[in-house]
Length: 273
Ligand code: NAP
Image (cartoon, rainbow, N blue to C red; front, side, top):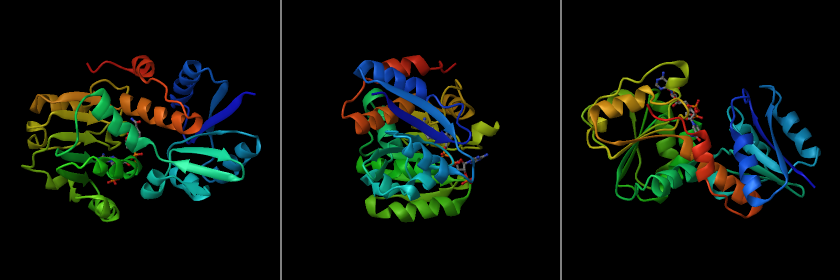
């Protein structure tokens, strides 16, 4: 029987998930269909329950429904529970299980694909939205030297730092509190580029960096990556590897088999020029 999976979001037509999971399914010899479902902004719950009632197996969740799906779940895996948000779900019997694979995917991309160990490193994450929330525990699990979150709205960064304080050393600052600060790994997890805006960042944050990583992907060299390039010799990466690796984790959680991410990364990479 063909498994039915779907990603819920609004908007969702941009999602690469169907391409990714169809490729993984080919590799694993699994018969599945994977679709995009654009639920109305005020109608996630009904759409999600209708999908479940159709006999579906599971899928993914993207903005703005990561908290709604978490609220609809009956069992939460550790990473989802800690983040209070999910990007992956499965229907098992009467249960709706949820997981958050964003952070594990990002950490695996950095450490395994890009060969940059995070232990002992001074890490800066720009942004304090849903993606950052999912990434903090997996980052702190790697025992970085310091973990700093900087956000335009300082109170959101403060809230996250307080929520994750029990997992390791973490500090919150405003974007205007970065002058003169130096880091080894700098990540852009803001959506500024989506609205064509660039961040006003001090050059110091890149000067000693070994890696500048933009979670945004498929856009070539973003203003963030250009700024890193101009101010450091850091390796530049976008979020295509994170996208592939969070999908590997989701697929392994559904099917108990880990697909190889390389073909997907190759298929979706837009050169950083
Ligand atoms: P989100 O929850 O909407 O959070 C957006 C963040 O960006 C907030 O911290 C917001 O700051 C900040 N921001 C937006 N515009 C800004 C501006 N002009 N100047 C400074 N800060 C600005 O989004 P999200 O879900 O965390 O996603 C963040 C980015 O990561 C998105 O672009 C998304 O595409 C990408 N992402 C990639 C992957 C992947 O697999 N590669 C996975 C997840 C997300 P305020 O709090 O001040 O509003």
